[in-house]
Length: 440
Ligand code: UGA
Image 1 (cartoon, rainbow, N blue to C red):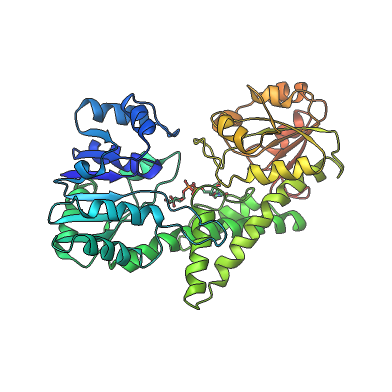
Image 2 (spheres, protein in one colour):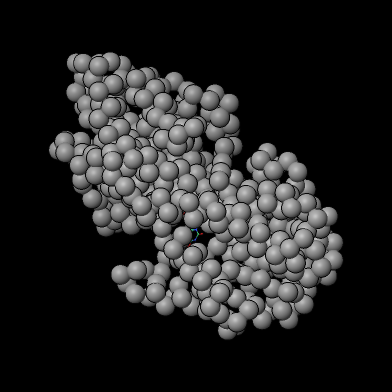
């Protein structure tokens, strides 16, 4: 099948490369000509494991191309995906749909009859109706269908998530459009990934409901972690104890410094706005957003408290800055609020991140970026692990301790064993494993 992907950002690029790998003919379009030039030279605009190799294989095989010319790219396509950004609109938290609508307007005049226009961008309920209206108004004669097909890719694991999804959601009541989507996803379908067909509005809401539910799970376990610290319980035991119940499930129950990234913060906020606009309170999501915001700075204070409450002039080394491992994405990363809290308290902050330092330097110019975790720990009063990169799991604890001036190790992701950290000479503080909690 022939597919155009409008928007060659994270979602568009991963989806386009994976569709090409299925054997489809794919053009990824972007307005940013320097991005397209770099993609043509196999330079990826983002860090995503395996993406450069996947792109190269499919470009070499003649199945994947990049272009700035939207009109010629959508000609003759079976499906045109809109995968442009929907950032939070400044000021009110609504999803900013201007890029989606601009793409709809531009493709309207160029599509052939019986093209399926697919919104892959995360868009509020009802956006499909508006996209349909825009295309019909611009090109009244053409037969087309607008379908919602949300993505459930995790950054850092996006290719695996695309090729082995838990489910594919397709929102459309138009039978011929459903058939085109069956063809697009046929390789997965044959692998028995379930395809769920719903109405367009249900599909749009599924995306927001899924992200809000996952954000709720994380926030719930984070609050349990706080309680564990007060009660002398161990949050990892609690997670396991509840997660083994199939009705609850073990995933997304890792306590930490709060969720960040390009999706959960933005999507929970947009869902709140939709609910408010429709006079339907979603109080749980409201509480989740508020609790998560407060938590990020609270984690900064946790580090300050581990150092006795006054960190003026002290040096703190941070390990991991990106919102999660295997990405260079700094959007809404908890490290941003943590750094701000530490700087406000008068500390000097040094940091290391395997992939994120270039991006991080743009949002935290006062932090000294270091070339290794040990360099970040040099003469530090405390080291705090913020993002659980694999590279930090096997650190030489003795070497880390020897590099430092002080001995405080704050582990905001619970990746170390308290007994091992203490044996290496650290005063070890983690999340939801208070001093009274039994060793793990
Ligand atoms: C998330 C969803 O997991 C994807 O299904 C969805 O497609 C994507 O948003 C999106 O809407 O595009 P992503 O933001 O890449 O994916 O990352 P996650 O792995 O979900 O992590 C999000 C945040 O939650 C991170 O800050 C992570 O550290 C935190 N988290 C996750 C926890 O604190 N604890 C957990 O148990 C899991």
